[in-house]
Length: 377
Image (tube, rainbow, N blue to C red; front, side, top):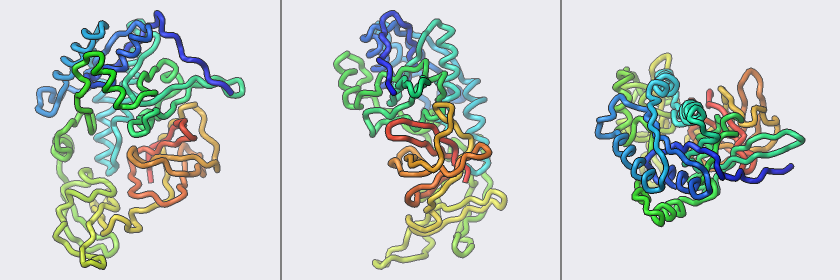
């Protein structure tokens, strides 16, 4: 087994996806310093309300133009709003309407940033694309077969391989992640030293097309309220009313409006908080339980569907891997028990909290991201 050396950037054209933030700005800067011919590309992916107080598209484009001018690279602007609405936002709404909790940023990466963007960059004459994601790509030869592996970033607190698990060999073979070996603090330091005004710009958070706005308020524009009962899972007792199952997710505590309903008490006489444990879409019932560690919120197994493996080959069954059933959880030891009918049964070494249909479970072998799927049950 051996990994290849890094590609020499001299003379190679790279189009960098630039968002106006410090990460993509430093990605472009590093490639320019490494001898690549760099072109910045700003993608407009959402335009339903780009004059809204929560949408920062115009401000971000100004920042991108300023950075490109500062480091001396050309800038292209492309509108992928139609593709985004069809391939990402349409799926987002269907999933919520079905009672699941999707992760549109994962779909955006595979369908827009590494498909539409890649195709457009190749048409511009690029040999590679690059983004400011915290991840790494390694060309690896094993038993005479060469493949591109997706690796975690050096900065474990910023690693974004979870959001990239759907990338395939063709996409990874054309992709560079210039920040994969850096820590976030160093990225900001590099930006400041280079005179980039975005060095202290706040990181964007949340789903890209929602921004900082209230989530329920946004969702109600597209999925009207459908009130139903809130019931206690243990007793089936009705204790409140929800405005729509799509506005709630498994493990949710805030926003249930049932705080005044008393139930179990701990030794100090404090009442346990309520958590969403189940959504019955057919009956339009939201089930809740009391206590963060209620058994209904803990499970050792899940079924994953819509599988996507980075190497194009499914991993071995009955082999110990680790997996993340959501982005912010630590890697947990697991086994893949079954890979029939396009689904995988994943068994964890210990119970996992609030496994949520619609979210992605991503499998790793050490630092290598193998791929994953969408939690179905």
